[in-house]
Length: 374
Figure 1 (tube, one colour):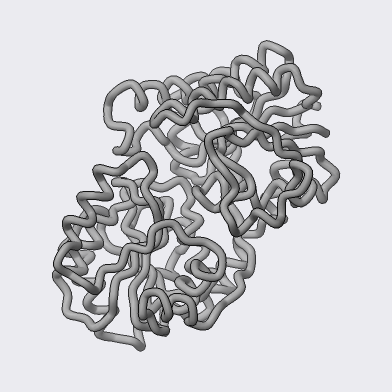
Figure 2: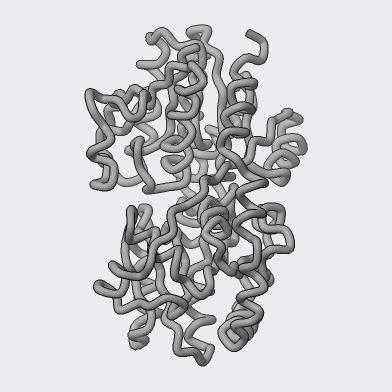
């Protein structure tokens, strides 16, 4: 079976959740005997961590082709999804698999050519604050309507998204959660040399710097607590420069708040491995890979009480009321004051999440969905 993947920036990569998913999942699908092609945007390049893994336009058996686009903010993804959809329509593919709602605006093209079209909704993207209420948000919502009407199969990551499509479009979907692999833990070396960080000496968040991730709540709460632990914010802008500037303005004057920018490889592994506490204050999620990774590293986790978080972490995390800075402040202070509570949250969480979420199971379910109706 031949499958084309459309809607991501670039594979292999860790620059976003979709990229992380496909970088992990696609090689497993190849191991299952599928021929997988990823259409990478021409405006995005493989980061240094992965350069040595790509040879002859292949990554671990996954074919890499180019979806031509223009590097224009807000338009690169839209153009790339159409050029990829047209290329896939003329390609010898059994399945064209779209990722994210915006790119699904082009799903009707391969559908016209008789291709089986699958869509994965990684989150209700039109709700993301960075898109506002203008053209971008309306375009993404249009993509949602297209996939609801024309996709042969729809994958969602949570029960909440499943219920949304049932109630809004009377459309059945299949829940296939993200998976997680056992991570490689690292002692603090790079982070000590570069940022002066020591094991258990900091709180961390690993995230794109976008408003729905709630990082502004975290900075406000951190500025209101008394602690000797630093706050590390690991991540980069995602067409959200104004928001990032606002975050840095909030953090100005507090030398204990560290912005690392985008990190990957051993630096990222060290950040996860040595954090005292990981915080996920999101207003909106699909299924957070950062949450899964934090638990897989055996970290104590404090996150917002949205269903997408509570369904994954269950009773293995501490929660605060979404958007409530006072509640977040109180919980942060309590955890900073009580290392025994942190140890209790850490106890067995890696085994819990690794047993519950497997990429092998994700691959099985995805292959089965591709076969439906074949």
